[in-house]
Amino acid sequence: GERAHLVAVLCDCQDLDEGCDRLLTCRSLPPGMLERIADTVSDRFRIPWFTGAVKVNVSLIPPLVLLPVFLHVAALHFLLAFVILTSLPIVVLWYYYLTHRRKEQTLFFLSLGLFSLGYMYYVFLREVVPQGHVHHAQVALLTCGLVLMLVALSRAKRDPGYLPSCTSNDKSPCQGSTELLSRKVLGIANGLQGAAGPGVPSSRVVNGDTKGYSRTPAEGSAEAKEDWCPKCQVVQPARAGHCRLCGRCVRRLDHHCVWINSCVGEQNHQAFILVLSFFLLTAVYGIMLTLNTICRGQAIFLALFYCPGVYSDYSSALLFTCVWYCTIVTSGMGYILLIQLLNISYNVTEREARMALRDNTGRRLLGGLVVDTGQYNRGFLCNWGQFLSLGSPAPLRSAEDVV
Ligand SMILES: [Zn+2]
Ligand SMILES: [Zn+2]
Image (cartoon, rainbow, N blue to C red; front, side, top):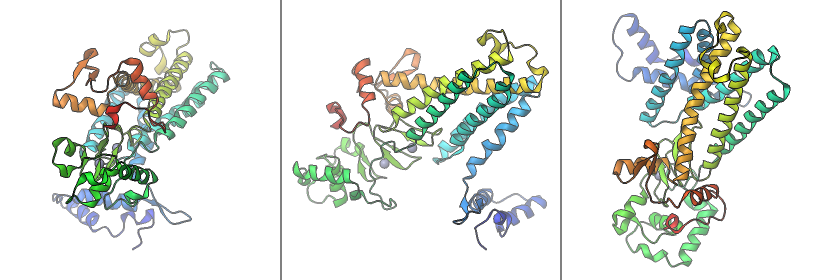
């Protein structure tokens, strides 16, 4: 009866028993049964540990098993590689839209990204380096790029700039944060306390004060209601947004990134750009070194499409498959980085671009790659200056960011 160990996965699950019965007697499953079985299995998927069984997030597992299997099968034949490498992005995109529709967080993409990196590095060390065409300095440079990317990733995984929430299921009360307290004091000192007027619930008064706003939703203005997050019970500053996956409001929300399983906001946007940049540089360098080893004497770009005899030996076929896998992933990341750099140059966030397109208030530029809302765009240099000062302790931001 204890839900403590892996061995309990198949015990005492009435849904599983009934599901098997129905399967054997060719009867259909009642709705929701498969989900309940999946929930039970994922709940009991625990590893015995000294301090008590540790629950393992099931979404971590598929990449660890599927990626090596797919890559090894793809190395068997050119056509298998073609089918697997074209279907892989489709499956990942399908899973992405599924999780987005369900509005749930998943570690699948982070696990896939990190495991892909680790696995590619392992294959590089095991198959490319022993062939002797790569210098120690080149291996060291590649390792350095990988380490820098991981350091940037750990920074990007920190607080994206969550607004303190006052909802009942939040463990930390909103007055707990020192920032809020100081802002509240500031608000009272500025005489904003009375601005909410009588009849306004006290929590709203507190929230109104904490942001230094004189207006609250109770004032009835449509604009004020737009700034109010009913889920977090806070007044959002300009450019902040509510993330449905994290269930929190984030300052200067750009988007929720499934690859880092976190929002990209005011505090971690710079680190996010660094992660993408280091990833691209390292991946391109790794691809070049590998192609240089398996297609001696060929030009790098040509070798990607024409590498004679690469499938005659399993090791070089596996390396060629890995190169193409990296190329597909790198192209996707390169596109994301390009969009991000353009967005920063026009001082627009992903969220603002999406809303501007929805409301028909922005104009598409550069063939639709970027949407200029014109709201915060102060010229290329100013926009980059503002981006580089994001998250600094003494923000010198323009007035429209505050008002
Ligand atoms: Zn919110
Ligand atoms: Zn989020």
